Image (cartoon, rainbow, N blue to C red):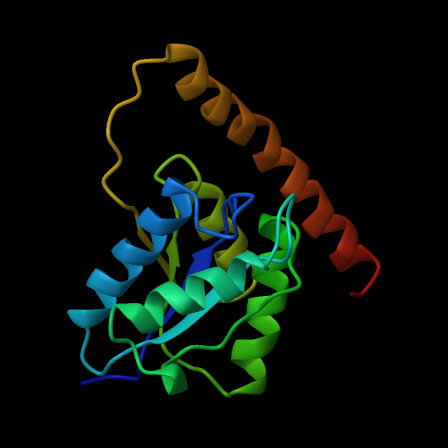
Length: 169
């Protein structure tokens, strides 16, 4: 039995009525299922600020985690992040402040996990991934939009990480 893991659940949209989008709900459910199989039980870090609609994505995810039976003591909300890189930076700071030395898992959709894991690795964490099962979309434009978005976001985030390191932040 090693050090407990941390599962960072990356945010997705909150609906106008304050309920989670399907993507957000699936990410939380996948993280909760994966965490239940871990021994010792992990720390959950739902991350995401207020998007187009409130409340903060982290708050909505924490509520979902508690509804699945995760004790509040194992949930640390990160409600300030506005994108993937700011989520990684904020969660890395939280984990370092807590003295976390176990593995870190990113919970997000499969198309998003390579970038999440890359950013976590660059932040100094051993990083794994947790992806929910997502029904296949019949709309090829929607599928390709998200994939192409990641193709552009990957080098953008790498450039930002390099820039922050050069500036000493």
